[in-house]
Image 1 (cartoon, one colour):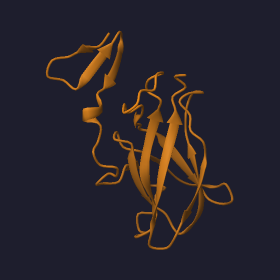
Image 2 (cartoon, helix red, strand yellow):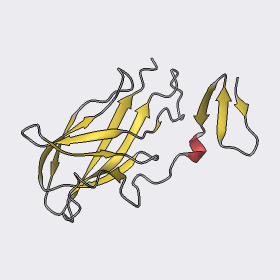
Image 3 (cartoon, rainbow, N blue to C red):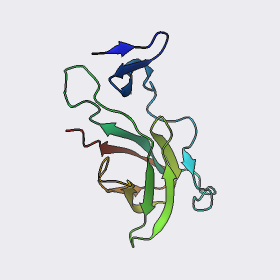
Length: 144
């Protein structure tokens, strides 16, 4: 049973609260960089890196045609170089988006999680000179 809160974009099911799809971001990418640790990020490097979105799915155990079953997710991601050394660590925004400057090269993205779920797989990314590589990180919610 759904209970809608008047003048709100929230729906309450029992004690769970879900954002309705109408309040999900319309844009795929953030206008500004996500929260990044300035002591480890290479701000002086312009023009190359990674940008993308972090999502979590499923948000409902039941798939329905035409119904979005994911939402943006704020997560911490560690960036490793080819030798496995940490280059930087960043956090996606509340809307799941991120943009991080990186030198051209091959990197491994390690999505962090303090528990078994939610979790996401590591990804290898290639950053080319003067380009931002698009990345989508999908956390499995473990709901099923």
